[in-house]
Length: 424
Image (tube, rainbow, N blue to C red; front, top):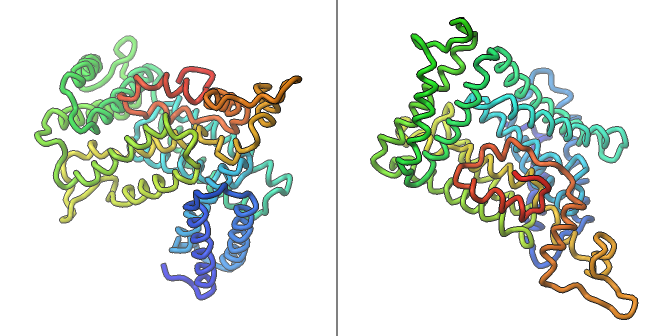
């Protein structure tokens, strides 16, 4: 959609703001200053207020244009900056989390692969984010333009989530265990299909489980007590058939990846490997804003799909769609972001160790007889204790359930390293 003349002026200002944010993100020579971030934030809000006044005069429904896309990018990056400067409990910091959740909800709606437990995790997190926005609205900490924007984003997520919950409400209680097991098996199959060279031996136990479930059907239908046919047959039967289709694709694959999908697969696989590595190694070097590049790359790949499928240059749908399943890296990105494992940025750990650690943990500090400086070799362990004392938000448990099987062996190590209280 073309821009109105008044919107062009706003667009130019927003482009300038994005350039300022990009320059600030790329400057690793010094700490990010709160006043710099807040100054840019005020500039963004000013442009949003102008845009709201302009669009309030529109009579018909608004069609998103380039300005809307650019503002979404700016708010996503600005949200990560708020996490960097330690303002994770203020509503601007929630934008990137809401955007990630919206992306995951869209994929879940598209694939129809989710359980009631998955949706409950999303509902709880949305309620927490809404509380943050509501508190800022009532206190007047942030302008109405910001809280109005976030309310709209939250309402969009709520609408999708309600639709997903309604779709499961028709599931008969007799079929709930079967449905949950099929969802788990499908995720395992997608993770297996996404491997560069999946081992056929890994497929065998999954196929055995699928055949056991298949054996419970009579004439293509699952039966309840006394031979009664429960409702919602299509939900479970369709999921079972899809699992067999994925398994067949894994079996029939002659090459690692089809030629048309190889560039996409390689890019996704590299991103996934990098994100897995970041969970273990990024803690003292990565800023929240460094996740921006992954977010943008995932969005670019997602836009390449047509009706949920990747297509080749001729518009044909090549085999191997599950090999490049977008939900693998996108969910892992949401895990890194929403886990909040990068909250203790360099700025937050910058105070002099004796003073800061004495104040927060009682470790180190000034002895009655002499000044005792904390041993630098103990910093990671003690930093983790500081980390637990200031972690602002809870993770979205749903993101853990999507992580491919090859991470299973690392889950406890990840949990231990980031200082969580319970096993993942």
